[in-house]
Image (cartoon, rainbow, N blue to C red; front, top):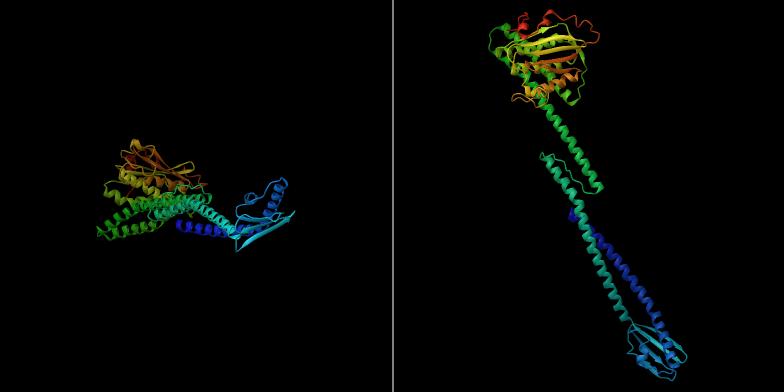
Length: 439
């Protein structure tokens, strides 16, 4: 492109200078030619006046005296009052300009050779051409400078597009002191920044969705293995029914997680039975806890009703249960209680709890006490917050996490529905309270 731009400037400048030079030469030639005849007459008149002055002073007129009255390219022929004829040179033949003046018995004829005038015009034309060539050279230097200044941004834009195509999404980060090009560069940088944000968000959504799918798929896999390992048709029927329920819930997992992560969730919060939510999670996780020779139990109030999306809160609760299974020890206790306008779901176990160095960052993304992804608690807090609740760590050692969900408005009997089991203060006492679980 730089070459084409330079050629364009060269051809345009050459055409303009050629046209201007031709016009200028024609004007000079016409003006000079038109002035030669009057100039010859003026030269003859000057010679007559000069001769009169010399004669009046008593002097003599010769060839040298006559030549002093004219320029070099004119030939004078003077006739004096006594009849003497003086000629300053050979009278040219061919194209000439003649001027004749007679006064006081003195007659002078001035002859100018047209070829001498033509030579002067050619010299002036060569000067015009030289000046035009110099102007063309300067114009090309200026064109080369600006061609580089204009084409460099375009080359940078092309390289930037090539980098984007190969996955390199670095911003241009360069300006060129040309307002129009700088505006294009600014738009490209802003667009690339928005594209990077969008791509990063999509990657985050994909990671979070795959993380949340892993948990129910693991539980479903354990349940299917249990079906394969038994010949009891009642057990097969029970396990298959539970597995079908898990499969149905899987369909909503991705939609819920993606909707919350993108901020495009269209579902509205509705009241749901917390008992059903907890029961479904216990049913799904019991095989995994039994495989680890551990138990999961539910204690506390019954009949509590929270407001939100049951699917989202099921995913958040599943994250807490999974963390308890992976990082905890002993019996995992899910405790339900009402606290003012909140329904509280606590998850606790007998494990060592959260490492001290993670107390302040346990809910941050990419923070984990093991080699896991560190997404679980961060995403669980996001899901709970999306329904107007909050997820907190009540104690770090042993670990007790609590989901605070909005209670149904007007449910004034929430506190009254606390059962005697809600007074259980430790996992060991919770187990001895007689709550049943699947074995």
